[in-house]
Amino acid sequence: MSATGVFFNPRPDGISFEDMISVAQRADELGYDALWTGESWGMDAFTVLTAVACHTRSLRLGTGIVTVYSRTPSMIAQSIASLDLVSEGRAILGLGTSGRAVIEDWHGVPFQYPLQRTREYMNIIRQALAGERVNHEGRFFRVRRFRLGASPVQPRIPIYLASLGPKNLQLTGELADGWLPIWVHQGHLAGLKEQVAKGAALAGRDVSEITVAPQIMCHVADGAEDLADATRRVRAHMTYYIGGMGSYYYDLFSRFGYQAEADGLRKAWAAGDRSGAAASISDEMLDNIAIIGDAATCRAKLDQFRRSGADMPLVAFPRGSSFTAMLRTLEALAPEGTPRTKPSP
Image (cartoon, rainbow, N blue to C red; front, side, top):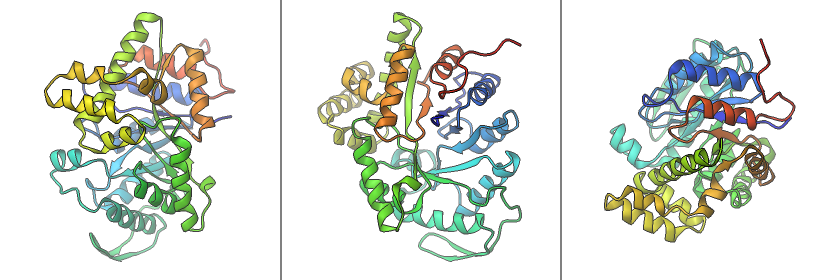
């Protein structure tokens, strides 16, 4: 059975907490491998995943992502070990740097030396989770005599890195158990994976040891009107990242060959023209980066991501998706070998 994950980012203006738990339970029933949740200005990842752990049985639980600027590495080690205990061994730690806009404007912390900081975090967290007494003298942290008082269930909690830049991809290959790209172009996924493989080779590893888990915006539409609405919402979501999140995603889309579109989008965004910015997102961009359409079309596109190198694609929902649309999408894209309709009670 092909592994498929689901990404859910709870927001105060989204669906209810009760519906979020229902989404997680349905994903569990359908055989999804893992549920991931990130952090922005909504709920924090560890609280959400702890709640999901208490209402599911098999679903693994991933932070997708917590940033290396918002907590100390010792605190992250404590939190993921606690989640692993509560979930009886189902925790996955997803780490990343996020971007300058989030770190400096929202967290009030200088966005400096992201690669070196990530490496140092991973070293400290790995030592702590292994039960070692941590004595670390680094560029960012001096940790003395720290040891976790509560050991995780898993002998080695998987650590995934969110990365898309060349140096960060190499670091992922060197150190991580998994890779969490976002807004990835299916035609460029194999090339990005090759950069991860180069980093793995430098560390004496094989890229097959690293799970490739791209987060993909997915919506299985219920008719033409719903398809048009979902397309509009995905365009708006993508526009926000390119126009409102600094240069990181602008650079990414430019590397994918969409610099002209990205330039037009940023110009409109800077002028306050949000609809004009969204109009710069071409149909080709949507077709190669998101999965929108009827059930058969969406399943075919998900399979294309797998053929391009995705080991565990993560089904993510466009902002503003209804509870019904989430369930419809989950059921249509469920891993092979599991029922796509809910059994009668």
